[in-house]
Amino acid sequence: MGPPGAGKGSVSERLADKFGMAHLSSGDILRAERSSGSELGETLKKYMDAGELVPDEIVIKIIIKSISSLDSSKGLLLDGFPRTVIQAKQLDDALAKAGLPIQAVLLLDAPEEVLLKRITGRRICPKCGRVYHIETMPPAKDNICDTCGTKLIHRDDDTEQVVRERINLYHKETEPVIEYYRKSGVKIIEVDADATIDEVVERAIEGIRQANLLEKEGRTSA
Image 1 (tube, helix red, strand yellow):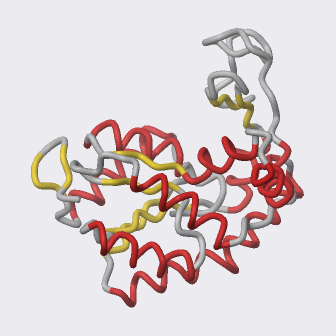
Image 2 (cartoon, rainbow, N blue to C red):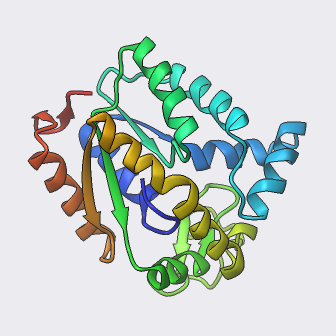
Image 3 (cartoon, one colour):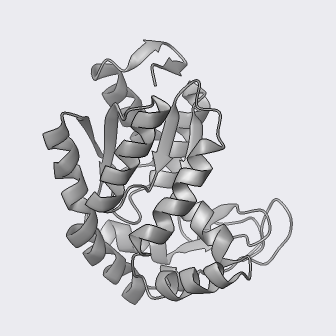
């Protein structure tokens, strides 16, 4: 968990790869649906392009379906979900039925101006999904994907105005989820995300180790 721009996606991918966990990114799933051209996709587009949270009933239905389709035998890493207390409660019910209770919340955070700079400078390949940054991770050829040669895009929800709205929504809607988990007895692993991705990943791994969540190197207990 963490505000927009904290690095949830990048850190999650590396942790999932290191520990062999299934990785579920709510943002990727919702964006794929938004681009599908379906009626649901058009509904999602209106919310996401405005920087607003997608209604719980829509998100929960999509995410729970995705969770049930994954092999979570080595653990499941949820990236960007839940975002509201209602989502957290319904997720708990679904995971309890699947025998996969949440063991910990990895909480990434950084100053707001750092978050803004990261997101507004982000560029994405619409074909292969590779992510770049105009300052910290630019492509070899200006605005062209190194992997597939496709012209990069600046997402509609990566503008400063929309990002500020997303951050405000995070404070209002998602921060209470952290308190919900604290009261539920779930371990909260706090990580300073104002650093390079390599440093943040190492801090996250150390936090996981200190929380005694590892059975052995390369795996988690759930």
